[in-house]
Length: 502
Image (cartoon, rainbow, N blue to C red):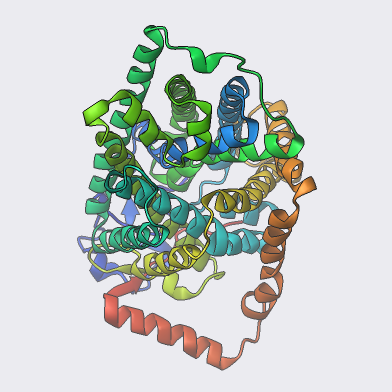
């Protein structure tokens, strides 16, 4: 087992080797990895819990309650769906604990699929991450930030759509600039905004419990009255599971986690029940205060809650929510760079994705590309359409990763598995996810079909630009030119990996 971080990203934890700095070592060839950048395992159990909790709690809990209730119109069913989403996400996270400790290379789903099913399947996961999953996630969270940040200035109506999109674009570009300038500053931003989101949720929970304690429980009359259909239940789960997105992000930094064989599953067992409990309590508070018509009509349900409960201090709620979602965009940007760097190290993305700033060690070209893709996603009008479109593709790729875990048990039984979950867990998870994908798409298959078409469109691209042995010389010249231009403009250098995905 090596302590080297697979994509070579260095932070303040980096230790120079051979008495030389990273910039002196960068760009030189060293036999058997000598002189390469090394990271110590600095992430503790508490850090692991913070990564999971801080990544999951983003925009979802502030926009998804309306989405869940919109499709069920039932208080009791909505609370059950929130609980079920937490349980299903916990099962998935435990399966990823086995994957993350048996395949120690960074890259998450991409690494697992590449090892399990080969380079084509791995590339298709990277393809949809590049085109759909990562930019769509960032766009959804940025739009939510913009809506809540603008809401205090439009008390009696929703903010203008163009203003929201413009503010979301400012959020994306500002955080991209921060991540390009300094890893240390981007992590400080993450810490500050995580505190903000926790304060917002605690305020909502305490206010809701006080509201119920005063005997105002009329919104809980007929809790099971609602709309029930396969399509509606499926889309309600989509909105709930969107709020739990991020439970697998610790797998992107497994190599930096101290004693991952123990701390990875422990972090999951601590973080997932904690988040599930918070989410159920927050929704209970929402339902106690916000009536059915308000819940169905307002995207900013937390703001409606604050106006009813906090009176003159209601302006604090959209501020806290904006802090939460702003930090969520920052977290996705930070982890996306690791994924794309791993893909470039495996030869499945252009080499400029491997470029990191010589001193600051920030993946500037990768961050700029991710930002541009997210800005293009702002052309989509409906945030819930983004969730539905994004969820179909995402959950199918997660199912494929878990299926890869079972395939590896059969294909490579001697592979080291410090953690091995019971067979019932991955089977339950895969059945649940496939069911949730199929339920709404049986009636409205277009979202799933579009996602599948975009995924399969990566196949000809793979064979023409990746797998082809005798590539045109112009391809190499173009790639090298892009690398040299990025090196000159951003003062970056190629970072190599110390491990190969096998």
